[in-house]
Picture 1 (cartoon, rainbow, N blue to C red):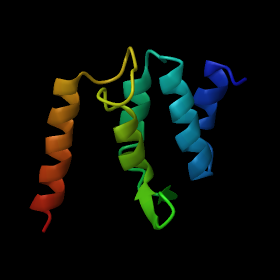
Picture 2: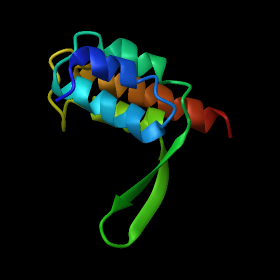
Picture 3: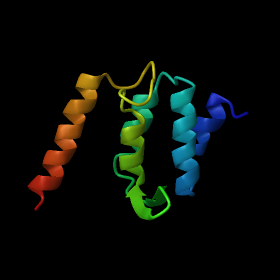
Picture 4: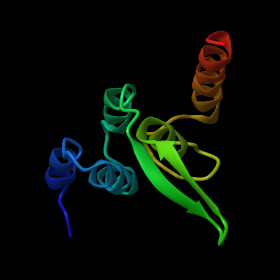
Amino acid sequence: VASIEDLVYLTENENVNVRYYSFIGLREKNYPKIKEIFYKFQNDYEGIFTNNGACLKGITSLNDLIFYELNPEYHKCKYGFTQKEFDKISKERYDKIVGDK
């Protein structure tokens, strides 16, 4: 079992999958600085292969995946976002994408 220190260290790993799963581990352990780790990843657009069912395959950026790991509707995290915070950041992210078109 990885310690919190191990997981924080692994967020710097060159392998994007290791970075992602270390973030999940920190969320599950209710790491008090989980939002700091989230913001650190905001410019990390490296892709992770995803599967949604038997037929739906794709690539999703690390920063998108970790954002949804902090959605309080689906994941409980003592130090994560409130629903209001999550919705505000979600709108900002959407506006940034739409505004770039």
